Length: 165
Image (cartoon, rainbow, N blue to C red; front, side):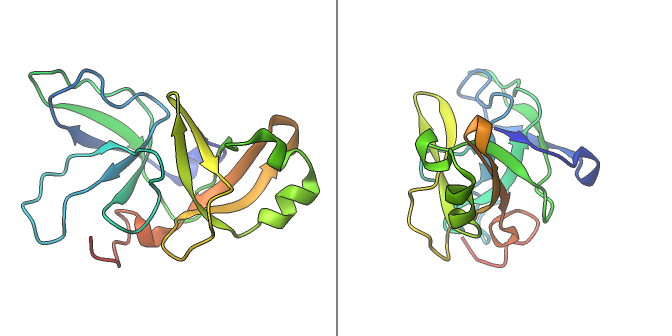
């Protein structure tokens, strides 16, 4: 998964990654913060997991620009591309055959879905039901590569947080 265009439209933000693993967040991984609004603030982030990408229980913190340097014994840090409004990302579709024509891509425009993680491969689950709580908003595609272009709805990012978690 990567930022498709517009590196000049964002910046790198450095986040804490809590100890317990080793290089927990790989470069190119979508990330989240799960610290509750009224709880003790830690500033730490985690990798997004399968079916994440909603406004419930998380805030999107961007796609990692680096690999985290946490270890089993020590906290570390990771840089992400901060999720500014309108930043366009690209990723493979969960099922390539569902975006292999422009007609299929056009039919998906504006659909709000979630991420998929299968066998350590990130994709966009375009078969997921369109729902108001979903934040992965399809805005186009790259038919030859079976990719979808998407923006992440600001309502589910650390930049908005209009919805309590």
